[in-house]
Amino acid sequence: MISRRDYLKLTLAAGATLALNPGMLWAEDKQLELITRAIPSSGERLPVVGLGSSATFASVSRSDDRNALRNVLKTLVEKGGNVFDTAPSYGASEAVAGQIAEELNITDDLFWATKVNVAGWGGGKANPDTAREQIETSFRRIGTPVIDLIQVHNLGDVPTQLGILKEMREEQRVRYIGVTTTFPRQYESLESIMAREPLDFIGIDYAVDNLTMEQRILPLAREKGIGVLVYAPFGRTRLWDKVKGKDVPTWAAEFDAYSWGQFFLKFVVAHPAVTTATPATSKARHMADNMGAAMGALPDEEMRQRMIHHIAGL
Ligand SMILES: NC(=O)c1ccc[n+]([C@@H]2O[C@H](COP(=O)([O-])OP(=O)(O)OC[C@H]3O[C@@H](n4cnc5c(N)ncnc54)[C@H](OP(=O)(O)O)[C@@H]3O)[C@@H](O)[C@H]2O)c1
Image (cartoon, rainbow, N blue to C red; front, side, top):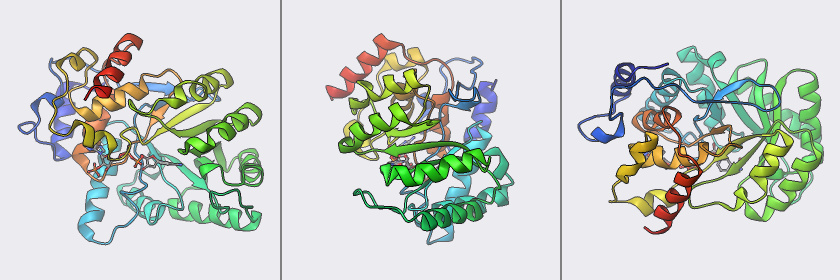
């Protein structure tokens, strides 16, 4: 349980200014609990909001950038979050996050979700030795003997690479395994993999204006007991462009959303198939804002339909 006072303290520490965005936080002085979801295959609970890193952690050329990312990771953990999504293909992401986590002494507090793919995205074959090498590099960069989750990135040679991950899960070097895609052309393959493979997780795109996966993939995840990481919950810049200069509707306060970030995130995490959404950010104040979506009420189905219509009408 986190009080509004604690929340304000943490948010201010993260650099947010209430004066700039007074409605971002809580309208009332109420106690809000961190919302968590159980991973279906184990029952272990994860906070419903985490952190992604594809573009934001990819290049850290200046020390200012590194300090900013340090504050982002610090804020994630201070606000009760732990899921960090990365990949070997995200440039410096794994290495920088691994170093910063070590400096902050939070390596063991994080739920590390990384990926493997040495096959490319076009149906190529993965060399098993190269795939194993890539995974070993991830272990070194992250700096843990056990990685929480490794997923096959963009369904690259699933038989080979998921095969390696299954062995590693057996050996208890990896706790959970899965596959990811954010390409609609791969959704059908994703479905057949979900139907036949013993996955703990999938990672997929999902947003209030991107709903195809609600038809078959999210229901299948529930049916098969597969956890879901939501990628691109803002469509990177798509939703931000859409709401530019527009106010969050006042009725969003009914489910404790006081910023567009909270509106978009609460939409996706309210879906019962979703375990955790991992929006990316390079700013601690956005991290604090996003963690606000992991607290308080969530929209019900009727409200979620209203949210879809509202955004479609902008
Ligand atoms: N196939 C895959 O495995 C796959 C594919 C796509 C994505 N992913 C994962 O999912 C993560 C998220 O997806 P994404 O990075 O494509 O896009 P996203 O999370 O939908 O959007 C990130 C953008 O939103 C902005 N933002 C974040 N919080 C904000 C806030 N509270 N207020 C205003 N702006 C905010 C960020 O800018 P600022 O830096 O200015 O905050 C950034 O430009 C990736 O980083 C990656 O970890 C995986």
